[in-house]
Image (cartoon, rainbow, N blue to C red; front, side, top):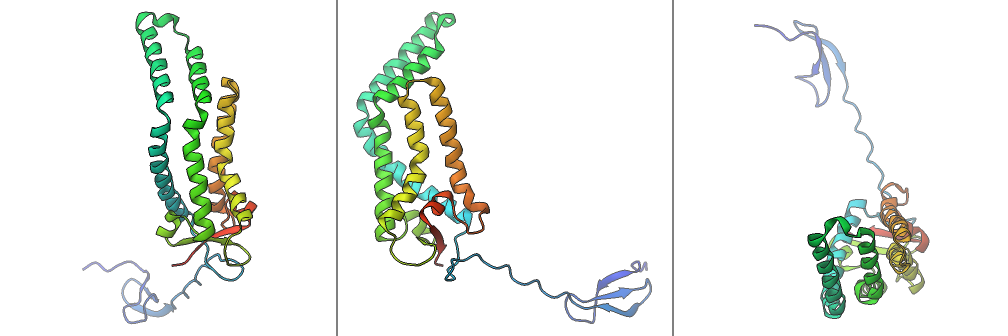
Length: 238
């Protein structure tokens, strides 16, 4: 029978996690006591001790809210975007016909300029429903419930960092200005009728739309940029 090599092993006769030295032929009296359990990692809280929401729970709540707003605004948009859909279909069909007849003479830049002009001409119908519905939904839910449906579903609430209570319209407006800023910047790029300005504004808007929520992932107070501006925190209640 081959014996295990000399080394530290779990003590067969001692408390859990204690190690005893095996000299290659027998157990010795040399033991290492169990290491103390590491202290629990502190959970970030508001100044009055309410636990702050984890970043991934906020992401899940945002996805739920996004689906709600997209569904409602999609229905409303379908009702008010008839003229836009018709004009867009005619534009695409004309481009496709040009590609079939003489692909080497197709003006791609002109086509994208026409698409941009079409979106600009129908900006209210294209962007209005989602913007108005999203702002109204968030504002009313935060004011009277303290959370959107997505946050309620995962046990989160929005409150002022320094004190509990109903959010003021000022705090809600501050959050909404920051969260809708990327959409406003992108719409401004479309309305400029310049492809270069559109690309620059889209890049700026897209970068900020990612940076805003990501900020809460590394911030010591778990605040996104819109939380910092509004002096709010998203907290967990279960």
